Length: 485
Image 1: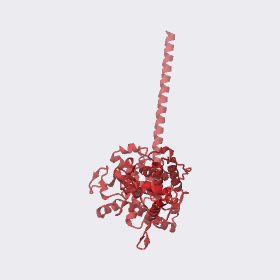
Image 2 (image 1 turned 180 degrees about the vertical axis):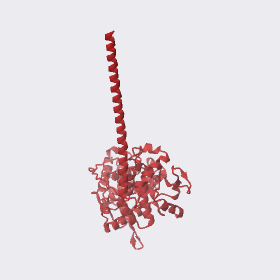
Image 3 (image 1 turned 120 degrees about the vertical axis):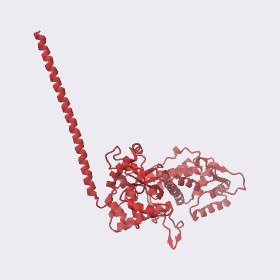
């Protein structure tokens, strides 16, 4: 299905009973009840009643007769992250409209009625809708996936919400997230055919001044405190894995045993017996950027990873459920870990930005990796190695990194391993001293180079002075000879 082929067709045959509303998604029984009420008003000759007659002659289809669920499936085929963003954006759109006392079905039908029957320009209506959704995402609001009608009782307990993990309140979204969601919402409106004749440059959204706070830097000593709070061995292994590979959570939970291989000291693939390190190849389908890459497993993790590869019969390395469920489970588990750590007096876990978001999230493990690995020196990739290993496609040295042989990447990785070590024997102080010693060595080398250059410059000037003096002496002798002759 392609969004470009989506169209609104008038159906002249009265025998066709498929209505426009039947094609739209329903989130809760409350929406269905409102839909029935709107259709019943047809008997009273209201404007909505006239629209219902119109709606009975409309169907939304693409070239294959698809609906909004097909749109979501296209996002799912791109990546799990795209699908998750699309479902969240759709929930924000529906939730905002429901808070106004309407439903998505009624709003879309009203706009289509204005276009098809009244030939009205709906640009201002669309702009007002988008602005309203954007403003709504800037404040605390009820979790639209976690209301009394949307959560079912299972064994006497309410299901944990996958969006807010049971808090029932969602905090403000950052400007970057709001722009992503609004872009998806425009896609949804485009799917319904509401943007066909609209110049999207006129759909500008006003954002408040974007205030940026300094990002919290997670230290290794704090990460060491967090990891033991994982409630099982596999979860603790996952957290340590994120710290030592820089992978995103969505990438790590999609890893399968067949993605792993053994490599030798030169980075070339080899057998289990000749293994130097374990390598994991990330196919493009599971990466955020859609570009495949590989990571090398830290030597401190090799034994645990080998045990899972050789003994586990799970489809995925770190779980045995659906990817979406695994992501929500890990986010929920980290929330529970946070609460337990705060009770135990670990104050760092309670730190928040002014927006209300926690400073330490599960994504911070990836940031820790990048910060430490970027300290690798001795190459053209100095200061950018961690970004490239973690899959940042906008790194300044990305082109150089992509053309580097595996052996050179392995050399750089072995330097990074020392910085990424979680072995208690390799303390932060030891690493700091090692860095200072290396810095002093570099300074000494640079000083020697400078001194050598100065000496060469002095020698050059000295030779030039001698040559000049000899030249003047010769000239003087020639003058004397000329005078005597």
